[in-house]
Length: 343
Ligand SMILES: NC(=O)c1ccc[n+]([C@@H]2O[C@H](COP(=O)([O-])OP(=O)(O)OC[C@H]3O[C@@H](n4cnc5c(N)ncnc54)[C@H](O)[C@@H]3O)[C@@H](O)[C@H]2O)c1
Image (cartoon, rainbow, N blue to C red):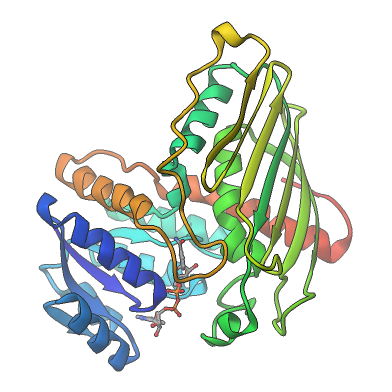
C-alpha cells in the first residue's frame, strides 16, 4: 500500500514514523508533496521517499499512490481531500477535518461520491482509557450520565504561533485553542458520551498571545439527554498540564488524564467494569506541538490500509469528525453574540 504525504511539516514527521513502524505490514511511504520545494526535498531525504512533488495535482496523478495523508494547514484540508477523492485516492485527513461543518461535510461527501476510503485522524480515540470510559457509558455502568468535564489545557508559546503564517489565523487555522488543540478533546468527550448536543454556550478570549484567534475558552454544552458537559480549552496554560476528562453518572465517576485512569469508582462495585491498564495512553502534545506520540497514528494508518484491502469501513469515517467541528463553531458564535447556540 503506497502512501503519499501532502504537506511536509510538523505532523508529517509523525506520519513518517508511523509508516516506518508499519513497513512490515506492507505500508510504504512512497511519495511526498509540499508547495515549498525545500520542505518536500528535505522530508524525502530524511525519510527515504522515492517520489517528490511540489504540486498537489502531480502527486494525485501518480498512479502508484494508493492513499494520501493530508497534512496541510487545516483550512485547506477540504479542498485537498476533494481533489484527492476526484483522483480516486484513499485519504487520511489530519484533524480538524475542516474548519466549518459545511466544508467538512463537503469533503466527506466527495469521498463517499468517489467511493474512496477516508480516515479522520483523532488519535485519542485509540487511548485504552477513553475506550474503557466510552464502553462504561454505553453499557450503563455509570447509570445516568449527569456531568461531563473536559479540561484541555495546552501550552503554546508565541514562537509556535509565529512558526507558520497559517497558525493562529481564522482563515487557515479556523480558530485557536479549541479548533486546533482542543478539537482532540471535544471529539473525544462527544464520542465517549455518545449523545447529541442540544445547545452550546461559550466564551473565548485572546489573552496571552499576539494572535487573531482565541487562546483561552470555556463552554457549557446542554446535551439532549439532559446531561451537562463543560469544556475548558487553552493554549495559555503554562507550563503544559495534562488534559483531563471526568464523567459523573448516577452510579459512579470515572476520570482519566494523559497518563491513564485516575478515578474508577462505581456504586455497584460487583458490577464495575475492569479498570483499564494505566500505561499506554499518553498522546503528547500538551506542552508542545512537536512531541506527538505515534501509536494512535499507527492504529489509524494500519486500519485504513486494511480497510482498503478488505473493502470495509474505516475506524474513523469522515462523518464522525464533523460533530466536534459543529460544536467548536457554535462556541465561537456564542462567544461573539453572547447567546447560546441551538444545534
Ligand atoms: N493529530 C495531531 O495531533 C496533529 C498535530 C499537529 C498538527 N496536526 C494537524 O496537521 C495539519 C498540519 O499541521 P503542521 O503543524 O504539520 O503544519 P506545518 O505548517 O508544520 O506544515 C504544513 C505544511 O503544508 C505545506 N503546504 C501548505 N499548502 C500546501 C499545499 N497546497 N500542498 C502541499 N503542501 C502544502 C506547508 O508548506 C507546510 O510545509 C494541521 O491541520 C494540524 O491541525 C495534527
